[in-house]
Length: 468
Picture 1 (tube, rainbow, N blue to C red):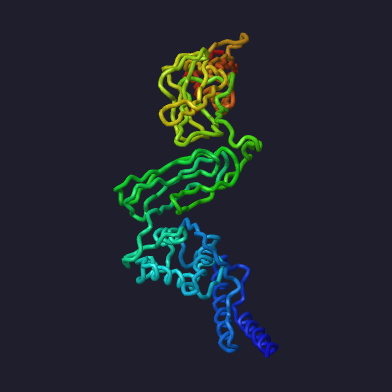
Picture 2: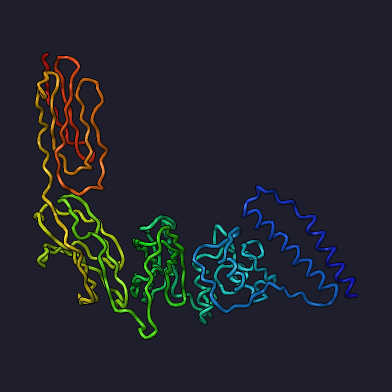
């Protein structure tokens, strides 16, 4: 009998496999997953038939019992796939009355959808309609929050009367999720999606060791709130952005290309590093022109109190503070584009970055190297000198530019090739004078035209009369 039962299983499985449509090399991942779901359903049905014929039971070997929350950070529905679907299936499979098939495939097929409907009905989340009208069979924010509450030992809730609604829920939208370092991302955090009225604080963790962003929801606010935050990832790596409150958690992954950041080594005798901050830009000896934007970059680390801020200030090289703070931010690691005010006098300066705890208490500070701010550049006239080298057909031309890399185009007015230079910012802002000579082919009247600057907006002309 044992031999015959195994032989029957073998032929039955072969029948399913041979009747399953061939997969072309052009099939998409979604098509493959859908076909796999159909096959798994057929196998489950066959196992049930075998169990009925032999009087035995058919416990699926893929069931993984788990009491942990599946940590669902997006809407899951028919056709979805991924690790979060796998975690959801494992959660549902704990209750055979909810998910008797217990297929852990990572694909949200009809079996998973049916299991979610049973769970939603059992806990009074929703019991009718469809995916589009009521979310029936869809693992959306409310269902995910209810699952999270049940995992934490609380009660899920609906309109049945014997259970309570979840008190926390939210989701995040992160853009972009890939890019080169330094990468600036924008996070739209939507909190209190369960419309609870209790006071609660959500935490937005950037995943790179910097101070998390707290998002408070005041008591009596029974509607969802939405906030937008930005964050800069200076180094390459994979970071998990996580929004959490209580037992609720949702996350997104950001992948940054580029060199990895410095590794902090903590010795066993030092449970936490002291607070520290450094400034990588501007650098010592750098020359910055008034009215021109420059970057200020800082990196704070170590034991920094929660809710601290970084204040950026301008100081003279002698240590005297100049004007109001340049910026203040909750980002412990970041870069700020600073437009040097025209009101700042030329001279030598430094940037001071200070970590301030709640109450404006100084935690730690650091200063950049001394750099120079120069006066705004003034364009001089286009100077033309006739009869150069005792030649009536030759002229000399001179003009100044802010740096040796400043762009210009010098046209002679006779159809010959112009003298040009493409603009670049790689040179120090040190003014120089350019000198050219040009020989005309014949006597006549010509207009010499000079365009200067980053966008060639400084235009000067000179009329020249050549007599031979």
